[in-house]
Amino acid sequence: MEVKNILVTGEPLFLERHQFLFTELSKYVDQLNLLPRDNEWYEARPIALLLKAYYAARIGSISKAHSLLQKNQKAFALKSKRVEQQISQLGYIPDLVLHIFGTYSPFWNRSNIPYVMYLDYTMALAERNWQPWACFINSKERNAWFEQEQQTYNRSKYLFTMSNVVKQSLIKDYNIDANKITVVGTASCFDKLYEGEKTFGTQQILFNGSDFNRKGGDILFEAFKLVKQTLPDAKLVVIGKEMETSIPGIEVLGSVSASELENILLDTDLVVAPARCEPFGIFLIDAMSYGVPYIVVEGEGNGITEFLSHEVDGIVLNELNSELLAHSIIRLLSDPCLLSSLSKAAQLKVKTKLNWNTVAKTIAETIAIYVSFNG
Image (tube, rainbow, N blue to C red):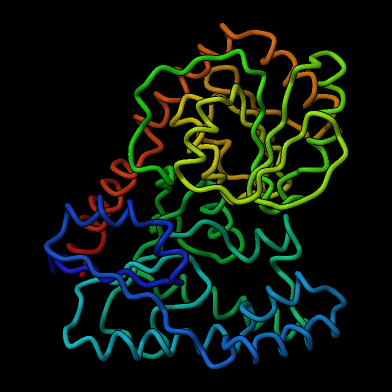
């Protein structure tokens, strides 16, 4: 069977974020359509607020209550059944379904349409590396989720992962055959690589603080205090979160548009992402596409580091430590020539590896071999 018609399923937000992937992937098939999931009854605002309040009272955490609303066995089943019903009402049968991420399955009962998945993380990784993403009321609920998740992976024709971290989790935590998994990476939220001149010397650091503690904001703020002692003109810009701080030299911008982010990146010497847990870190690729070098921290919780080259396109630290981070920031901001060298290598990495054309090509070629020919 030749795959000519692909249907993409997933949460509406996930489909929106990966629009450039679908644009590239559509070049390899006759037709590619998107099917975002419809909301369930419990997601209506009044009901969702009541359920979150109930969960918060049970576990004593509002943030974990939000996770519980979406990540429980009933939600997994409801979403899967809903999307299966949506597919049955399309009026045509797709050759293949590409399902984005593992929050539910594209099918609950039907098995005559093959599907593949594109994954950024697993619940097992979340449980080890960032507990708020793996919060369950009890062990029964936890085990039921894992059973549904594993069944979804097992029933898929093939699995594409953003990182080897996810591939190894599928193999070790879910007993998935390594031969049906390919690491493809991911790419920027910008559709084009910046080709203008990138200059350095502003001593501006950029941090995406949308999930402040998970992304290591507290460690960075401590490091920045040390940086200011050596580089009094250094500036730290925080985007993605509204917050108050009395630390001199920190500017909080909150949410910014794509065009605003482009201008910020042009004025930025260095992006710092000392995350405790980051499935991949697409924001780093955004920065690299504009020639902004990075500092990141390696670890099982962070997927992007396997694609990076320490001392070539940025700095990869082996531990989350404010003094070590401060030392690295000072070193780079004090050496514009080094920043320029890292900048060119970072853009080359995006141009040759971390781009949607490369990701889509790998997915399309793998589907042609392992799905089309194997039926």
